[in-house]
Length: 517
Ligand SMILES: [Zn+2]
Image: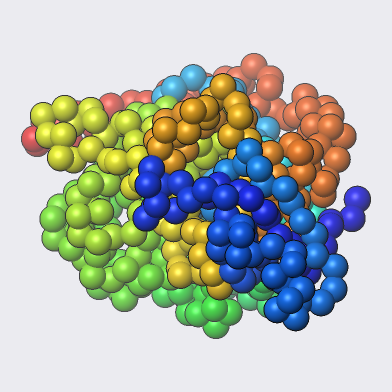
Protein backbone atom coordinates (compact mmCIF):
# COMPACT_ATOMS: atom_id res chain seq x y z
CA UNK A 1 0.00 0.00 0.00
CA UNK A 2 1.17 3.49 -0.75
CA UNK A 3 1.85 5.89 2.07
CA UNK A 4 -0.32 8.95 1.61
CA UNK A 5 1.74 12.06 0.90
CA UNK A 6 0.53 15.49 1.92
CA UNK A 7 2.30 18.70 1.16
CA UNK A 8 -0.28 20.88 2.93
CA UNK A 9 -2.38 19.52 5.72
CA UNK A 10 -4.85 21.64 7.69
CA UNK A 11 -6.48 20.34 10.88
CA UNK A 12 -9.42 22.66 11.46
CA UNK A 13 -11.57 23.38 14.52
CA UNK A 14 -9.58 21.11 16.81
CA UNK A 15 -9.01 21.37 20.55
CA UNK A 16 -5.34 20.98 21.36
CA UNK A 17 -2.87 20.52 24.18
CA UNK A 18 -1.59 23.89 25.34
CA UNK A 19 -0.04 23.92 28.83
CA UNK A 20 -0.65 27.69 29.05
CA UNK A 21 -4.40 27.48 28.33
CA UNK A 22 -7.06 26.96 31.03
CA UNK A 23 -7.15 23.22 31.89
CA UNK A 24 -4.36 22.82 29.30
CA UNK A 25 -6.89 22.88 26.45
CA UNK A 26 -6.91 25.48 23.65
CA UNK A 27 -10.31 25.17 21.98
CA UNK A 28 -11.31 25.59 18.31
CA UNK A 29 -7.86 25.99 16.79
CA UNK A 30 -6.28 25.03 13.49
CA UNK A 31 -2.92 23.40 12.85
CA UNK A 32 -1.31 24.02 9.47
CA UNK A 33 1.31 21.43 8.48
CA UNK A 34 3.56 22.11 5.52
CA UNK A 35 5.90 19.31 4.48
CA UNK A 36 7.10 17.61 7.65
CA UNK A 37 6.77 20.68 9.94
CA UNK A 38 4.01 22.41 11.85
CA UNK A 39 3.95 25.76 10.10
CA UNK A 40 1.31 27.57 12.14
CA UNK A 41 -1.11 27.10 15.04
CA UNK A 42 -3.88 29.68 15.53
CA UNK A 43 -7.58 30.05 16.37
CA UNK A 44 -9.66 28.50 13.58
CA UNK A 45 -11.21 31.89 12.80
CA UNK A 46 -7.76 33.16 11.78
CA UNK A 47 -6.37 30.00 10.14
CA UNK A 48 -8.51 28.20 7.57
CA UNK A 49 -8.48 27.34 3.86
CA UNK A 50 -9.54 30.89 2.92
CA UNK A 51 -6.78 32.57 4.92
CA UNK A 52 -4.20 30.13 3.54
CA UNK A 53 -5.19 30.86 -0.07
CA UNK A 54 -5.26 34.59 0.67
CA UNK A 55 -1.73 34.31 2.08
CA UNK A 56 -0.53 32.76 -1.20
CA UNK A 57 -0.53 29.04 -0.38
CA UNK A 58 -0.82 27.07 -3.63
CA UNK A 59 -1.43 23.41 -4.38
CA UNK A 60 -3.65 20.82 -2.81
CA UNK A 61 -4.62 21.49 0.81
CA UNK A 62 -5.87 18.39 2.60
CA UNK A 63 -8.29 19.28 5.38
CA UNK A 64 -9.03 17.19 8.47
CA UNK A 65 -12.16 18.21 10.31
CA UNK A 66 -11.00 18.43 13.91
CA UNK A 67 -14.39 18.97 15.54
CA UNK A 68 -14.71 16.61 18.49
CA UNK A 69 -11.01 15.79 18.31
CA UNK A 70 -8.08 16.63 20.60
CA UNK A 71 -4.59 17.16 19.19
CA UNK A 72 -1.55 16.11 21.19
CA UNK A 73 2.09 15.59 20.21
CA UNK A 74 2.90 12.02 19.18
CA UNK A 75 4.39 9.87 21.94
CA UNK A 76 8.02 8.74 21.87
CA UNK A 77 8.81 5.24 23.12
CA UNK A 78 12.44 5.82 24.06
CA UNK A 79 13.39 2.22 24.85
CA UNK A 80 12.22 -1.07 23.44
CA UNK A 81 13.54 -4.30 21.89
CA UNK A 82 11.43 -5.31 18.92
CA UNK A 83 12.75 -8.93 18.80
CA UNK A 84 10.97 -9.60 22.10
CA UNK A 85 7.58 -9.22 20.44
CA UNK A 86 7.51 -12.97 19.83
CA UNK A 87 7.74 -13.55 23.61
CA UNK A 88 5.03 -11.19 24.83
CA UNK A 89 3.23 -12.65 27.79
CA UNK A 90 5.54 -15.68 27.79
CA UNK A 91 7.17 -15.31 31.21
CA UNK A 92 6.27 -14.85 34.83
CA UNK A 93 7.83 -12.02 36.81
CA UNK A 94 11.45 -12.79 37.74
CA UNK A 95 14.69 -10.87 38.26
CA UNK A 96 16.56 -9.73 35.17
CA UNK A 97 19.58 -12.04 35.53
CA UNK A 98 17.77 -15.41 35.42
CA UNK A 99 15.28 -13.89 32.96
CA UNK A 100 18.20 -13.11 30.62
CA UNK A 101 19.41 -16.71 30.81
CA UNK A 102 15.93 -17.90 29.85
CA UNK A 103 15.88 -15.41 26.97
CA UNK A 104 19.31 -16.42 25.64
CA UNK A 105 18.48 -20.10 26.07
CA UNK A 106 15.18 -20.06 24.22
CA UNK A 107 15.13 -17.25 21.64
CA UNK A 108 16.77 -19.29 18.86
CA UNK A 109 18.27 -17.76 15.74
CA UNK A 110 16.13 -15.17 13.99
CA UNK A 111 16.00 -14.72 10.23
CA UNK A 112 15.85 -11.34 8.50
CA UNK A 113 12.12 -11.94 8.06
CA UNK A 114 11.76 -12.43 11.83
CA UNK A 115 13.40 -9.07 12.44
CA UNK A 116 11.10 -7.46 9.87
CA UNK A 117 8.00 -9.01 11.44
CA UNK A 118 8.98 -8.06 15.00
CA UNK A 119 9.76 -4.45 14.08
CA UNK A 120 6.59 -4.17 12.00
CA UNK A 121 4.47 -5.55 14.84
CA UNK A 122 5.96 -2.96 17.19
CA UNK A 123 5.17 -0.22 14.70
CA UNK A 124 1.58 -1.39 14.17
CA UNK A 125 0.82 -1.53 17.89
CA UNK A 126 2.53 1.77 18.59
CA UNK A 127 0.99 3.78 15.77
CA UNK A 128 -2.53 2.58 16.57
CA UNK A 129 -2.01 3.65 20.21
CA UNK A 130 -0.57 7.10 19.53
CA UNK A 131 3.18 6.41 19.53
CA UNK A 132 4.80 8.15 16.57
CA UNK A 133 8.48 7.51 17.35
CA UNK A 134 10.47 4.64 18.81
CA UNK A 135 14.02 3.88 19.89
CA UNK A 136 14.57 0.18 19.19
CA UNK A 137 17.54 -1.33 21.05
CA UNK A 138 17.42 -4.30 18.72
CA UNK A 139 19.19 -7.56 19.64
CA UNK A 140 20.03 -10.74 17.82
CA UNK A 141 20.73 -14.14 19.39
CA UNK A 142 24.03 -14.66 17.53
CA UNK A 143 26.38 -12.66 15.33
CA UNK A 144 24.93 -9.62 13.58
CA UNK A 145 24.39 -9.78 9.85
CA UNK A 146 23.70 -6.62 7.91
CA UNK A 147 20.50 -8.13 6.48
CA UNK A 148 18.90 -8.33 9.95
CA UNK A 149 19.38 -4.61 10.51
CA UNK A 150 18.20 -3.74 7.02
CA UNK A 151 15.06 -5.77 7.66
CA UNK A 152 14.23 -3.87 10.87
CA UNK A 153 14.86 -0.52 9.15
CA UNK A 154 12.71 -1.55 6.20
CA UNK A 155 9.84 -2.41 8.54
CA UNK A 156 9.96 1.06 10.09
CA UNK A 157 10.26 2.64 6.64
CA UNK A 158 7.20 0.70 5.44
CA UNK A 159 5.19 1.43 8.60
CA UNK A 160 5.66 5.20 8.36
CA UNK A 161 6.72 5.56 12.00
CA UNK A 162 9.68 7.66 13.16
CA UNK A 163 12.35 5.31 14.50
CA UNK A 164 15.91 5.11 15.68
CA UNK A 165 17.39 1.61 15.60
CA UNK A 166 20.33 0.94 17.95
CA UNK A 167 21.80 -2.56 17.42
CA UNK A 168 23.05 -4.15 20.64
CA UNK A 169 26.62 -5.40 20.89
CA UNK A 170 29.05 -5.99 23.75
CA UNK A 171 32.70 -6.86 24.15
CA UNK A 172 33.35 -7.98 27.74
CA UNK A 173 31.02 -9.30 30.43
CA UNK A 174 32.05 -8.04 33.85
CA UNK A 175 29.21 -9.99 35.51
CA UNK A 176 30.97 -13.20 34.45
CA UNK A 177 34.20 -11.92 36.05
CA UNK A 178 32.40 -11.31 39.35
CA UNK A 179 30.66 -14.70 39.12
CA UNK A 180 34.10 -16.31 38.67
CA UNK A 181 35.42 -14.49 41.73
CA UNK A 182 32.45 -15.61 43.84
CA UNK A 183 32.79 -19.22 42.69
CA UNK A 184 29.75 -19.40 40.40
CA UNK A 185 30.20 -21.09 37.04
CA UNK A 186 28.12 -19.04 34.62
CA UNK A 187 30.59 -19.16 31.73
CA UNK A 188 29.42 -22.58 30.58
CA UNK A 189 25.79 -21.45 30.53
CA UNK A 190 24.06 -20.37 27.34
CA UNK A 191 24.36 -16.83 28.67
CA UNK A 192 28.11 -17.13 29.33
CA UNK A 193 28.85 -18.81 26.02
CA UNK A 194 27.24 -15.95 24.16
CA UNK A 195 29.54 -13.52 26.00
CA UNK A 196 32.86 -15.15 25.27
CA UNK A 197 32.48 -17.96 27.80
CA UNK A 198 35.68 -19.96 28.27
CA UNK A 199 37.50 -18.81 25.13
CA UNK A 200 41.24 -18.73 25.91
CA UNK A 201 41.76 -16.02 23.26
CA UNK A 202 38.98 -13.89 24.72
CA UNK A 203 40.68 -10.53 24.45
CA UNK A 204 41.88 -10.95 20.87
CA UNK A 205 38.49 -12.36 19.94
CA UNK A 206 36.77 -9.41 21.62
CA UNK A 207 38.79 -6.87 19.67
CA UNK A 208 38.23 -8.64 16.35
CA UNK A 209 34.48 -8.91 16.88
CA UNK A 210 34.25 -5.28 18.00
CA UNK A 211 36.25 -4.13 14.98
CA UNK A 212 34.17 -6.13 12.50
CA UNK A 213 30.87 -5.13 14.12
CA UNK A 214 31.66 -1.42 14.07
CA UNK A 215 32.89 -1.63 10.45
CA UNK A 216 29.58 -3.22 9.43
CA UNK A 217 27.59 -0.66 11.43
CA UNK A 218 29.53 2.19 9.84
CA UNK A 219 28.28 1.14 6.40
CA UNK A 220 24.78 0.47 7.71
CA UNK A 221 24.62 3.97 9.25
CA UNK A 222 25.88 5.53 6.02
CA UNK A 223 23.01 3.90 4.13
CA UNK A 224 20.18 4.45 6.61
CA UNK A 225 20.85 7.33 9.01
CA UNK A 226 18.57 10.24 8.11
CA UNK A 227 16.71 8.29 5.39
CA UNK A 228 12.95 8.36 4.70
CA UNK A 229 12.82 12.17 4.81
CA UNK A 230 14.84 12.14 8.03
CA UNK A 231 12.33 9.85 9.74
CA UNK A 232 14.80 6.98 10.30
CA UNK A 233 17.95 7.12 12.39
CA UNK A 234 20.74 4.58 12.82
CA UNK A 235 22.14 4.67 16.37
CA UNK A 236 24.72 2.57 18.18
CA UNK A 237 23.59 0.29 21.00
CA UNK A 238 26.47 -0.88 23.23
CA UNK A 239 24.45 -3.33 25.30
CA UNK A 240 24.97 -2.27 28.92
CA UNK A 241 27.39 -0.65 31.34
CA UNK A 242 28.52 -4.05 32.69
CA UNK A 243 29.08 -5.48 29.20
CA UNK A 244 31.43 -2.99 27.53
CA UNK A 245 35.06 -1.92 27.72
CA UNK A 246 36.40 1.62 27.52
CA UNK A 247 37.53 0.89 23.97
CA UNK A 248 34.03 -0.20 22.97
CA UNK A 249 32.38 2.91 24.42
CA UNK A 250 34.83 5.38 22.97
CA UNK A 251 34.71 3.77 19.52
CA UNK A 252 30.91 3.76 19.66
CA UNK A 253 30.70 7.44 20.51
CA UNK A 254 33.24 8.34 17.84
CA UNK A 255 31.30 6.43 15.19
CA UNK A 256 28.01 7.96 16.32
CA UNK A 257 29.52 11.45 16.04
CA UNK A 258 30.83 10.69 12.56
CA UNK A 259 27.21 10.16 11.46
CA UNK A 260 25.50 12.69 13.75
CA UNK A 261 23.76 9.81 15.54
CA UNK A 262 23.18 8.79 19.15
CA UNK A 263 24.34 6.03 21.50
CA UNK A 264 21.86 4.00 23.54
CA UNK A 265 23.00 1.79 26.42
CA UNK A 266 21.33 -0.04 29.35
CA UNK A 267 22.40 1.65 32.56
CA UNK A 268 22.49 -0.01 36.03
CA UNK A 269 19.08 -1.61 35.69
CA UNK A 270 19.63 -3.92 38.68
CA UNK A 271 21.50 -4.00 41.97
CA UNK A 272 23.47 -7.00 40.72
CA UNK A 273 24.77 -4.90 37.82
CA UNK A 274 25.66 -2.02 40.11
CA UNK A 275 27.47 -4.42 42.47
CA UNK A 276 29.45 -6.08 39.64
CA UNK A 277 30.47 -2.75 38.11
CA UNK A 278 31.71 -1.41 41.45
CA UNK A 279 33.52 -4.67 42.25
CA UNK A 280 35.42 -4.71 38.96
CA UNK A 281 35.97 -1.01 38.30
CA UNK A 282 36.04 0.25 41.87
CA UNK A 283 33.64 3.04 41.00
CA UNK A 284 30.07 3.67 39.88
CA UNK A 285 29.01 3.47 36.26
CA UNK A 286 28.42 7.25 36.13
CA UNK A 287 31.95 7.93 37.41
CA UNK A 288 33.43 5.52 34.86
CA UNK A 289 31.43 6.95 31.93
CA UNK A 290 32.44 10.48 32.94
CA UNK A 291 36.11 9.54 33.34
CA UNK A 292 36.33 7.95 29.89
CA UNK A 293 34.54 11.00 28.48
CA UNK A 294 31.46 9.34 27.00
CA UNK A 295 28.81 10.76 29.36
CA UNK A 296 27.41 13.23 26.83
CA UNK A 297 24.01 14.43 25.52
CA UNK A 298 24.30 11.90 22.66
CA UNK A 299 24.02 9.09 25.21
CA UNK A 300 20.61 7.81 26.34
CA UNK A 301 20.53 5.47 29.32
CA UNK A 302 17.53 3.17 29.74
CA UNK A 303 16.62 2.29 33.34
CA UNK A 304 19.27 4.20 35.36
CA UNK A 305 17.49 2.67 38.37
CA UNK A 306 20.64 2.46 40.52
CA UNK A 307 22.00 5.93 39.76
CA UNK A 308 21.36 7.10 43.30
CA UNK A 309 24.45 8.75 44.77
CA UNK A 310 23.99 12.54 44.75
CA UNK A 311 27.44 12.86 43.13
CA UNK A 312 26.37 10.50 40.31
CA UNK A 313 23.12 12.40 39.77
CA UNK A 314 25.09 15.65 39.66
CA UNK A 315 27.40 14.15 37.03
CA UNK A 316 24.45 13.05 34.93
CA UNK A 317 22.96 16.54 35.17
CA UNK A 318 26.22 18.27 34.32
CA UNK A 319 27.04 16.06 31.32
CA UNK A 320 23.53 16.01 29.81
CA UNK A 321 22.96 12.29 29.08
CA UNK A 322 19.27 11.24 28.97
CA UNK A 323 18.01 8.54 31.38
CA UNK A 324 15.01 6.54 30.14
CA UNK A 325 12.43 5.40 32.69
CA UNK A 326 10.80 1.98 32.04
CA UNK A 327 8.41 1.52 34.95
CA UNK A 328 6.57 -1.57 33.66
CA UNK A 329 9.72 -3.59 32.97
CA UNK A 330 11.27 -2.48 36.25
CA UNK A 331 8.18 -3.78 38.06
CA UNK A 332 8.00 -7.06 36.15
CA UNK A 333 11.69 -7.82 36.74
CA UNK A 334 11.68 -6.35 40.26
CA UNK A 335 14.62 -4.08 39.45
CA UNK A 336 13.74 -1.08 41.59
CA UNK A 337 12.46 2.44 41.15
CA UNK A 338 14.34 5.04 39.14
CA UNK A 339 14.96 8.20 41.22
CA UNK A 340 12.95 10.29 38.76
CA UNK A 341 12.22 13.14 41.16
CA UNK A 342 15.88 13.55 42.12
CA UNK A 343 16.70 13.66 38.40
CA UNK A 344 13.99 16.20 37.52
CA UNK A 345 15.01 18.37 40.48
CA UNK A 346 18.51 18.60 38.99
CA UNK A 347 17.15 19.61 35.58
CA UNK A 348 17.92 16.21 34.03
CA UNK A 349 15.70 15.42 31.03
CA UNK A 350 14.01 12.05 31.65
CA UNK A 351 12.56 10.02 28.77
CA UNK A 352 10.06 7.17 28.99
CA UNK A 353 9.97 3.71 27.42
CA UNK A 354 8.03 0.47 27.55
CA UNK A 355 11.09 -1.82 27.17
CA UNK A 356 10.83 -5.08 25.22
CA UNK A 357 7.61 -7.05 25.03
CA UNK A 358 9.09 -9.90 27.09
CA UNK A 359 9.38 -7.68 30.15
CA UNK A 360 6.52 -5.22 30.03
CA UNK A 361 4.67 -6.83 27.86
CA UNK A 362 2.85 -4.56 25.42
CA UNK A 363 4.12 -1.55 23.48
CA UNK A 364 1.46 0.86 24.74
CA UNK A 365 3.15 3.99 26.05
CA UNK A 366 -0.02 5.23 27.74
CA UNK A 367 0.47 2.37 30.24
CA UNK A 368 4.02 3.55 30.92
CA UNK A 369 2.92 7.17 31.33
CA UNK A 370 0.30 6.24 33.89
CA UNK A 371 2.73 4.00 35.78
CA UNK A 372 5.34 6.78 35.83
CA UNK A 373 2.74 9.14 37.27
CA UNK A 374 1.71 6.67 40.01
CA UNK A 375 4.57 4.38 40.95
CA UNK A 376 6.65 7.08 42.66
CA UNK A 377 3.82 7.54 45.16
CA UNK A 378 5.25 4.41 46.82
CA UNK A 379 7.54 6.91 48.50
CA UNK A 380 4.54 7.55 50.72
CA UNK A 381 6.52 9.35 53.39
CA UNK A 382 7.32 12.24 51.04
CA UNK A 383 4.60 13.40 48.62
CA UNK A 384 7.01 16.06 47.34
CA UNK A 385 8.78 13.27 45.43
CA UNK A 386 5.65 12.28 43.50
CA UNK A 387 5.47 12.84 39.76
CA UNK A 388 2.81 15.12 38.30
CA UNK A 389 0.70 14.18 35.29
CA UNK A 390 2.42 16.86 33.24
CA UNK A 391 5.89 15.59 34.18
CA UNK A 392 4.97 12.03 33.19
CA UNK A 393 3.48 13.15 29.86
CA UNK A 394 6.44 15.37 29.03
CA UNK A 395 8.84 12.47 29.70
CA UNK A 396 6.93 10.58 26.98
CA UNK A 397 7.16 13.47 24.51
CA UNK A 398 9.87 16.10 25.12
CA UNK A 399 12.04 13.61 27.02
CA UNK A 400 11.85 11.04 24.24
CA UNK A 401 12.70 13.71 21.70
CA UNK A 402 15.93 14.41 23.62
CA UNK A 403 16.82 10.69 23.53
CA UNK A 404 16.32 10.81 19.74
CA UNK A 405 18.60 13.89 19.52
CA UNK A 406 15.55 15.90 18.42
CA UNK A 407 15.44 18.30 21.36
CA UNK A 408 13.61 21.54 20.45
CA UNK A 409 12.29 19.90 17.27
CA UNK A 410 9.90 17.21 18.51
CA UNK A 411 7.61 16.47 21.44
CA UNK A 412 5.19 19.42 21.53
CA UNK A 413 2.72 21.14 19.22
CA UNK A 414 4.81 24.17 18.28
CA UNK A 415 5.29 26.19 15.13
CA UNK A 416 8.42 25.09 13.27
CA UNK A 417 8.60 21.72 15.04
CA UNK A 418 8.24 18.30 13.39
CA UNK A 419 4.66 17.39 12.54
CA UNK A 420 4.07 14.24 14.62
CA UNK A 421 0.49 14.76 15.77
CA UNK A 422 -2.07 12.41 17.31
CA UNK A 423 -5.77 13.22 17.16
CA UNK A 424 -7.89 11.67 19.90
CA UNK A 425 -11.64 11.25 19.76
CA UNK A 426 -12.91 13.37 22.65
CA UNK A 427 -16.38 11.87 22.64
CA UNK A 428 -15.46 8.59 24.25
CA UNK A 429 -16.37 7.26 27.69
CA UNK A 430 -12.63 7.34 28.41
CA UNK A 431 -12.05 11.07 27.88
CA UNK A 432 -15.41 12.78 28.43
CA UNK A 433 -15.96 15.30 29.98
CA UNK A 434 -12.38 16.60 29.30
CA UNK A 435 -11.74 18.06 32.74
CA UNK A 436 -8.01 18.64 32.39
CA UNK A 437 -5.66 17.92 29.47
CA UNK A 438 -2.79 16.28 31.36
CA UNK A 439 -5.19 14.53 33.72
CA UNK A 440 -7.13 12.89 30.90
CA UNK A 441 -4.02 12.05 28.84
CA UNK A 442 -2.17 10.47 31.77
CA UNK A 443 -4.80 9.02 34.07
CA UNK A 444 -7.69 8.28 31.67
CA UNK A 445 -6.40 7.52 28.18
CA UNK A 446 -5.41 3.97 27.27
CA UNK A 447 -4.77 4.49 23.56
CA UNK A 448 -8.30 3.50 22.58
CA UNK A 449 -9.32 7.10 21.72
CA UNK A 450 -6.63 7.42 19.02
CA UNK A 451 -8.44 8.32 15.77
CA UNK A 452 -5.84 9.78 13.35
CA UNK A 453 -2.03 9.74 13.50
CA UNK A 454 0.30 12.01 11.54
CA UNK A 455 4.04 11.29 11.37
CA UNK A 456 6.47 13.68 9.72
CA UNK A 457 3.53 15.41 8.03
CA UNK A 458 2.01 12.20 6.61
CA UNK A 459 -1.29 10.70 7.71
CA UNK A 460 -0.46 7.08 8.62
CA UNK A 461 -3.56 6.21 10.66
CA UNK A 462 -6.96 7.46 9.53
CA UNK A 463 -10.16 6.62 11.39
CA UNK A 464 -8.25 4.01 13.42
CA UNK A 465 -7.03 2.23 10.26
CA UNK A 466 -3.33 1.90 9.52
CA UNK A 467 -2.77 3.10 5.94
CA UNK A 468 0.78 1.83 5.50
CA UNK A 469 0.86 -1.90 6.37
CA UNK A 470 -1.67 -4.71 6.24
CA UNK A 471 -1.87 -5.34 9.99
CA UNK A 472 -4.08 -8.45 9.72
CA UNK A 473 -1.72 -10.22 7.32
CA UNK A 474 1.28 -9.33 9.49
CA UNK A 475 -0.36 -10.66 12.64
CA UNK A 476 -1.20 -13.93 10.89
CA UNK A 477 2.36 -14.48 9.62
CA UNK A 478 3.87 -13.38 12.93
CA UNK A 479 1.68 -15.77 14.93
CA UNK A 480 2.44 -18.66 12.59
CA UNK A 481 6.17 -18.05 12.84
CA UNK A 482 6.13 -17.84 16.67
CA UNK A 483 4.80 -21.42 16.85
CA UNK A 484 8.10 -22.73 15.50
CA UNK A 485 10.39 -20.87 17.90
CA UNK A 486 12.12 -22.71 20.76
CA UNK A 487 10.74 -20.52 23.57
CA UNK A 488 7.34 -22.15 23.02
CA UNK A 489 8.80 -25.61 23.74
CA UNK A 490 9.36 -27.08 27.24
CA UNK A 491 12.71 -26.02 28.71
CA UNK A 492 15.50 -28.52 28.09
CA UNK A 493 17.60 -29.80 31.01
CA UNK A 494 20.64 -27.65 30.09
CA UNK A 495 18.65 -24.40 30.08
CA UNK A 496 16.92 -25.35 33.34
CA UNK A 497 20.33 -25.97 34.94
CA UNK A 498 21.71 -22.69 33.53
CA UNK A 499 18.79 -20.76 35.02
CA UNK A 500 19.18 -22.51 38.39
CA UNK A 501 22.89 -21.60 38.48
CA UNK A 502 22.05 -17.98 37.75
CA UNK A 503 19.46 -17.94 40.51
CA UNK A 504 22.16 -19.10 43.00
CA UNK A 505 24.47 -16.32 41.79
CA UNK A 506 21.65 -13.78 42.09
CA UNK A 507 20.86 -14.82 45.68
CA UNK A 508 24.53 -14.70 46.59
CA UNK A 509 25.00 -11.15 45.27
CA UNK A 510 21.73 -9.86 46.71
CA UNK A 511 22.61 -11.31 50.11
CA UNK A 512 25.95 -9.51 50.01
CA UNK A 513 24.34 -6.24 48.90
CA UNK A 514 21.62 -6.22 51.54
CA UNK A 515 24.02 -7.37 54.29
CA UNK A 516 26.16 -4.28 53.70
CA UNK A 517 23.20 -1.91 54.20
ZN1 LIG B 1 15.97 -2.98 27.64
